[in-house]
Length: 161
Image 1 (cartoon, helix red, strand yellow):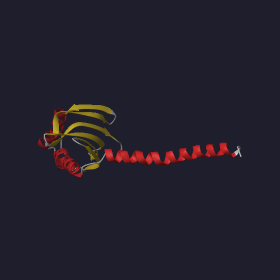
Image 2 (cartoon, one colour):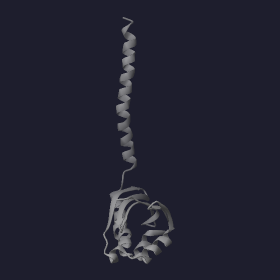
Image 3 (cartoon, rainbow, N blue to C red):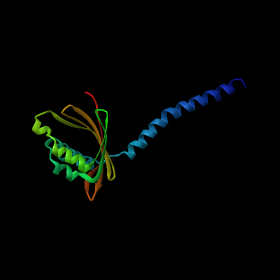
C-alpha cells in the first residue's frame, strides 16, 4: 500500500501544475483587458483629429490644420530610408508647408489608422501613411490638454513596399 502513495502525490503535483498553467493565462488576460478599457467617445475624438486635421493637413499641405493639433513643444523622431530623422513640430510643419502637397502633385495618398489606444488623458495611434514613394508607419502620442487632443510626440519609419 505504501508503494502507490508517492505515485499519487507525484501525479497530484503534475495535475496542479497543469491546472495553474491553464488558469493563470486566462486570469492575466482578463486583468489586461480591464486596464486597457478604451472609451469609445475619446477614441472617436482622436480618430477625428487624425482624419480631419493630421491626414488632411498633410494631404493638402495645410499648415494651419497641423498647427491646431501639434503641441508647440512636440518632437518627431524616426528614420526615413534608413537615415535618422529628428524635427521639432515647428520644423515639421514648415516642411509640410514648403513642399509640393500630395493633393497638388496628383500622386496617390492613403492614410490608414491601424489602432488607437486611450487611457484617461493619454493616447497612442498607429498609422500607415502611403505618399509619394514612401510607406510610413507612424506612432503618434496624444495628450488631452484643456479638453483638446494634441499630438505631443510622433515617431516614424519608412518601410519598403
